[in-house]
Length: 148
Image (tube, rainbow, N blue to C red):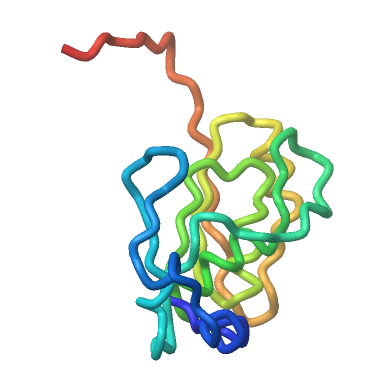
């Protein structure tokens, strides 16, 4: 859970009739909301949309994302000294952020060129344990199976 923030004071002062009852989703998903449930809360689960700047520093990968994205989740779910696993490491943004935030990190990648990029760019901050990186190399031909 995350702190409600200052917006709650403004938003919850004047509730509409819709805010006081369960307002079903307009897309027919079955989900809904009742804003009045938030009165008096100090913390809440975040919404399903994070609003972050889309600018990234890394241009060496086809699917880069801003450092703020893994930072938000790392802050939410871990504390200093915990472990962060990135099973799709790519160029290492999540591992980099985890190290910066004093977390231990493990990064796994299957593409050698991205693994090399991550290896070259990830330098542990002074006094911290280096991240553990793994390149999963192809062992023969992989076969896909149909589920039964």
